[in-house]
Image (cartoon, rainbow, N blue to C red; front, side, top):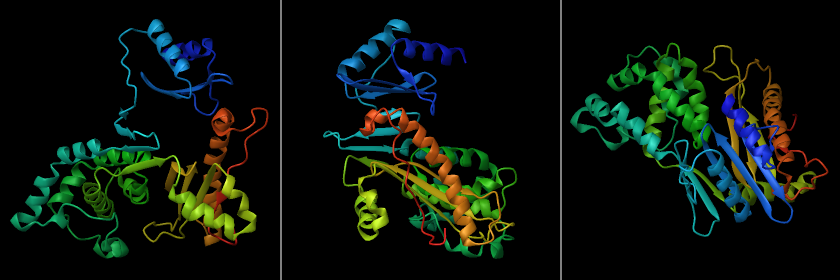
Length: 340
């Protein structure tokens, strides 16, 4: 609390503005020189901006105020366990957590427990899987009384440790884990066969896609060329999508068969400049009576994130070339249900 107060006063004295939506974000905009943005996590920080002069000034102020032992990198290579890489032409930025996946597999002794289960004839398919889905998921109740094999027992013994790491991966660089991890984490207190099989399959999938992550491109993103572009041309009411800088998609299934109360699952994702920046997959707290209700519940959940993002970009209008004296355009929210 004391550090937060100190750092906040430090940036405000330098003319930086603290975001109302994110208390760890500070910005400074000078119409003649450019802008600088700083985000903090405890004692780690990221700096970016359009003015090298303003960035150098801030770095020197941080050294003068706190310590001359601060270490700096001209380009971010990792942050909070996420590996970052920027292309030489500054048009592509990638993030992945391959090191964390490998560390998880090493702690689990994945190769050893798999070989001990399958013996000398264990094939590659016992170590990896190309997708997080398997046929057993379609009839999981019929297999719930089957005994666990050796590898599954080891997963059960370390269930919380494994799911904790998977949750971190799913909220940073691996949105593809969310739908299945959402179900698996319901067994934190007392994991059943369903939860263990889900986690086992996710580990197989992770072992197959160790270095997968997020890729941000300056232009030519598929969501723009394959989704937003065709939609804006096909539907007159969506014509303005072609010029939007951000868009949100939401969807929901209906009456999940693996849920005792037949609750549906909400899913949404938020894109900015064609790049995925926020996502979620979660079980709905209400039991929907129809696909329409499940879609409305999902849209309501997504709108909370859209409102937060809209509030955030009010303080970042200079990044979007929006007028500073007027609110930014609302966040378009798209769903695939005609009735909704």
